[in-house]
Length: 629
Image (cartoon, rainbow, N blue to C red):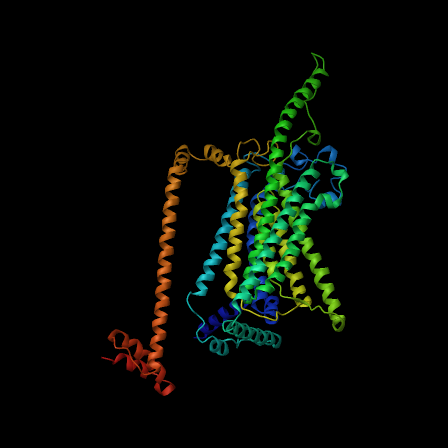
């Protein structure tokens, strides 16, 4: 008996220990108690994204970057691992490293540094195969974890109407009786108060009478302004892309900092100012706060998605130019090698011999590695977006908050309201860039982890110091799948260009683990040919037959359709059962029993629960139900 009690206490203490180990839990609870669940949902989403990126970083670091660093050829052994002679003088300058050129470009941070040998090290580690499979694994894991989170939210929601006796449940079940810390108790009290405000606001919003014609006109006007803003931002990005292509043909030494970073800065500034305009347009629509938030997020999502795909189209043009340039460079390198060998042989007489022909890797001409160029662009865009966000918070929010607080009686501004709309979409947009660029820059998930880690502390400080709670509060628990749905969409749209590049574009001939192959995916066939028995390779090739793949896809689609139809039918049956049970409750309360005999059992059960109250009557409900003829 004593051991059983100690075991129960150990399990309880272990659960408390696990809860205490959840990162940033106290910070998020403090924010929720002051600003409500809507603002706290952003930080919960950020923490969830931190966990996802941690898994991606572990995969890329342990299976790609670390094997290459430990077992691969060292720096300076190959042209792809050496800074060119013309760039050696400035390879370690801060400006060059900040632009991820020089030593940063010729390191494990980017695709072009990796060797194309089938095996490396004493373990015969298959680096090209690992590089390809880890890239596909990261995409598959991302889809799996997002879909799992959405399924979990649907399961927690339960479906149907769960608002019955909403305030009664909040009154009797909100308090946590295990709280022993006064500060925690104050936070819990504020959180319960905020939850009641949210519930009352939702009840009032359902009873407001509106002028329908005026609301429709204002909403049409707001959408008109939104389309004008989207069109203007699209034209501005198109103009910036054209200018960046013109700057690419000029000498880099003649360009200033703005000309080099104009494309990234334009995208960051549009992502910073356009959400503010959308928020102003939303004031005309007078939606419920939760609906207004979804409209705002949808508009910002369309803006950022348009920006991202314009950026991708510009990259595709640049990639095509690099591929054409590679063909010329490859032909010139062949002539250069022939001339160098001919000149070297001519320097010796017919009967004399010299040392083997050798050229330092820094002096070997090389082609433009378009994969490294793509990785560099995504890393630069990520870093510039982070810096823009932090500077905006520091200057735009903090300095304004200080000015307002000290000049409160002579200024018309208030502190910033809310902390959701632009931040959630910026988080999703940045994650889309990570998914898109991590195949060409394995270090990108690690950079994103540093960004998310610093963002948690910096933005928690900003929201507590520079913001005030919303005047109109609302509950955000039902919007979790809305965020995840947008994340799933951006994941799908981000992986499409990557898969297109893997399948359709030829890899660079002198850089990266897939150099020397016509397509990147040929590493799978090479592994089947050299590392698997012939009979197994034949079976796997038959399984990859297009006819069999199409048949499997059709079966999967039909299975999904059947399961979806079954789930809808079960949900409808549950709703119908809930309606019948509510009707029976009303009939029992009014002492009017249904005439159908099979429904009397339910009626008597509800009636017994209604009349059997108190400890002295704890068995009478069961007795009434059992002895009914």
